[in-house]
Image (tube, each protein chain N blue to C red):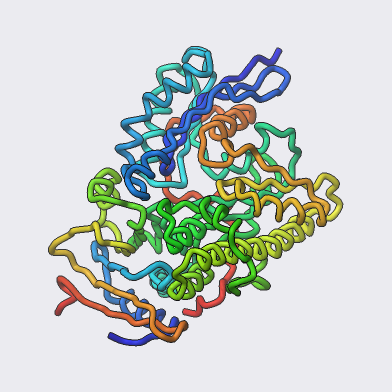
Length: 358
Length: 146
């Protein structure tokens, strides 16, 4: 008889130090027993807006407390753990190493398998924690560090069908927030400012909108905001700019998601269950959410937003990916090393964006 | 100072890519959106072209702080972005400059990086009146002075 599977997940690929305990019971039901994230947002505000102490030392200082808390909150003990998974890449090497070292050490002491997980695979599979979702599905990942369309064909089989060719979407939001003088350079402020602004006030460019497949580009848009903002002084105009920027993003996403859906279906014309998963911090923007819900409806897709605690960087998705690997009869690997660059789909073709004429 | 277009920026990136070697630095300064990552995109891909490698995407390193590009067994480029760092302490904590002698180092927002006696080309980009062009200021340090 199959027993409950309990995994400890650890995530330290960038700013967050996170640990989580996830259980899959004998019937296949998944439960997050704990999900601890050392979000540094409070410190951000206190220090006037920018990450004060991000980086490996911050991770090293916190990792033991975070793991202990995750175990404590899960109401399990270390001896109940069947395996350990930690993010092995992509990310900042010194940060990854903190989580990897902690994870390997714990697994070694427990004499359990260890799994080095690709952070992007964690995001790709996260929808499966809360939703009974069947392969294949289309994934849009929109966060501060990543912006891509993935065709999740099966566990372990991911095809990247589109990517940003410059800035990540979350980054574009953060930087425009900064240009608009927000004291926290956080894209969430754009959503709030937009509510007071006229989205048709400024006409902004939509780079590569009708070329380069479902690849995305935001750098030119960011630059256009920068150039226009120089003449914008009063609050009303700032709100208009925020609203116009958000509206432009929505238009870009509408066209590009539609294109991605077509590309996804081209690969499998007879697919019945058309699922579209939208993950990443930017997916919490309500205007973007509503826009994508509408689009999905018109294209016959069921849209799925994993809960926001699973959208931003977290360790539950890493634990869950570990469980999936374990179930594929993988024995794990203590020799896996941290890797700063680790594309989920190394075969993804480079699609030339305009302007790269060498 | 020179007024340039994006095409000129590519040419400048190519010229500089022929001059640099492991351990060298290129500092990239200028406002948001002015073209620092665009320079990096051309610079890295001129290397790829020279060694008959695939053209690659050069994404903004803002979030990850550093992205590495291996052109071949001998040439690797580290593309840093210190935009999100607040203090010198952050920089020390991350330890990303511990192996700089193994890379050609491209650094955006380099203000916190106080390195003396390095071989460095410093590039400053500014917005010009014409939206499509930029002003560029290039200054050489160390062996590039000669």
